[in-house]
Length: 151
Image 1 (cartoon, rainbow, N blue to C red):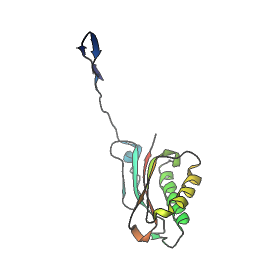
Image 2: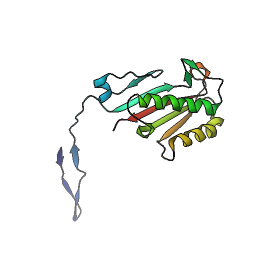
Image 3: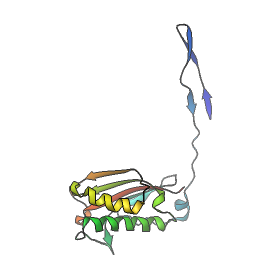
Image 4: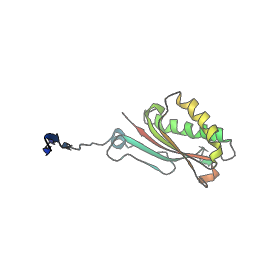
């Protein structure tokens, strides 16, 4: 790391300027990249050169069929079940989740989604964004996009 600083004169006082800091960037392949673990997501998982995992398109699905007839609570629980399964396959848990985007087709269902979410995360909640959308794959009422970190 290289640091430098300069000072400027302002009237009678000498005021230090902001320090310029340069960082070296180092990166290596993650455990998932080295071992070639599959993704299991509707749209994909991308790790790049870090230990971040990006899951997108987690819908309430069983055996390849979206359970759109389930209640919003059941659909949310099923999405979180699928997320836990995907994480478990990588020796991770919900504690490794860094951020969740919840997409719902009915913004009035947020309270029901929140109840399931709060019960599952047991008091320690990752940052979350809830977005209202017109439709989701298979007429699902909820979908998750998740960022997790293998620390």
